[in-house]
Image 1 (tube, rainbow, N blue to C red):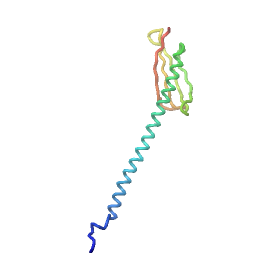
Image 2: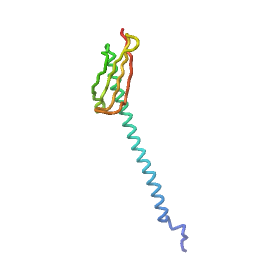
Image 3: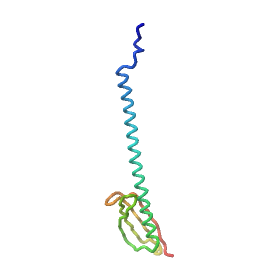
Length: 121
């Protein structure tokens, strides 16, 4: 008994279309994985920069910080971080404002910024 054409299996065109659809889906998943890794790295950098900023702010608030700008570098999370601390007067002579900005060293955009106020006791 001869076979009908529908019983012969897939044609070459059908296989190529299926492979194309699979390839597009696989590339989309690979791209999504790459985006997830980039996002995780960016979040990690912001969290570590925030920790450095919090530490430098706390250090300034322990005593009465001197007015002006102080800069330095810290090492945290296996990376170097550049910080700038600005202490300025407020309208009340008994209160100073402390701003700390942290960026990747040596030069980079600010990833964390903390502002605090310190009053005399």
